[in-house]
Figure (cartoon, rainbow, N blue to C red):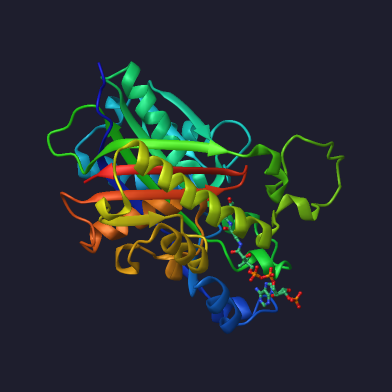
Length: 328
Ligand code: ACO
């Protein structure tokens, strides 16, 4: 028997500080003109010193739980998608579960970089297929600015911080959306194109200073080409296997990395720009949080409402990519 995978709540937290292009120009050799013309980004959020991926995820989780009426003790799983966890160990999910007071649940992180939300939705769907009574709190949270090299203008202007929390279950009286299908893929021969170091890969003798590979490094131009091609292909494959065409889609919600990538994917798919949702201008690339932040804003501004069919698509380090069909 096939069990539904229903999105029943979506909570959001974004930090107060809006780091504008003008402020960035005081930190790094760049210009508002370069950033807006190459990326479409005007500002991004930057977390405060006392905040972290876990505190942002917790704030989003509390909002999702409050809107759904679900109690922390009702959760069977807490999963966090992030490539900027608070610590290598324990998982950010365990830190959040402890703070939430969810005494007994399965808690762990996943890392598919910017594809983290869509990969996580696929995982939630599989969990619900085998365990239909599960109630999953799925958080996508990133503190990207903590891993920016403020001397590398080709990357530090692109990323921002934020968190979302989604609740998935197989039954719900008034779900926000139903997952219709999801496709996840990767080309891991290209894993070196986007990296964040600082793991256990090499010895760090006491007193050694942090090296550049501690921060996000990206071969932007190369990534750009793969991103456009893979996102468009994934959308086409997913539509085809569901007997749909792009004309059946009410809203395309792509990963918010760069307005030029969003436009190029939209035009390859042949979808009207009025049906493509973008908020990269205000948030930059929030990695795993990017697609659900965009979904939440589309809902809040009523661009998205009951009865709409949505196609989401993401792309990130790995290289990973994914496409998702949601019926609202
Ligand atoms: N300000 C001013 N000049 C800059 C800046 C800046 N912030 N950054 C780069 N430049 C300069 C470069 O030095 C270069 O100058 P040169 O020609 O004198 O050498 C020039 O601008 C062009 O640089 P490019 O890197 O070729 O610029 P491009 O048009 O490719 O844009 C960008 C760069 C925005 C990074 C683009 O390649 C991109 O968006 N790539 C994809 C990123 C992405 O999608 N990532 C998703 C995954 S991220 C994840 O998974 C965590």
